Image (cartoon, rainbow, N blue to C red):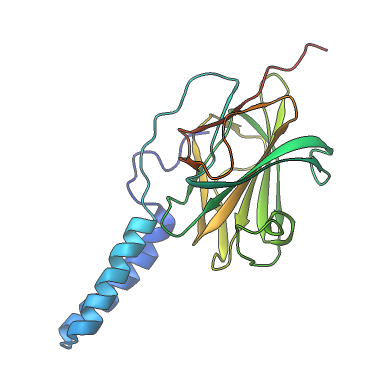
Length: 221
């Protein structure tokens, strides 16, 4: 797939919010509302900053799994992934607060084997229950060697829309932008249990550039 947001400093989904904010700020200034102009101007600046789309240096190495988003690692746990992979896996959960970059990136290169949207609640995204109970969009990725990795976009307390720019069957590259979540969210990555984990709970990570784990190539069948 082509990196649809490459070279664009602001996610296109944020442009309407920025324009509305700018219009309201201009209107407040026109009628002479000093405090409302300052407040709306700050809101517009924050909205512009929230939808920022920085470039990242993607680490080389097919076995390296990169973070799908900016934020804080809130869980590294071994569990049976019963919905999609249906096998024992290692889940790495990353919480994105409203101050983090919210562009989502592919943790691995390969094929988007399937994509499943699940409606749900809007609990705080840093809570364990969010992994199964919140609104989410799951991407099943398959590397060229057959290794399967699950990447899940999870809505948070004030997030009300999950955006994904890919469809099943697309070829993707590690670190490519594939969507975003508004406003505050979580990313879960499920890896094979043979993975070597490179992060711990509390670590700050950056989407596309921070290495979460190393997943060895699949054994030839």
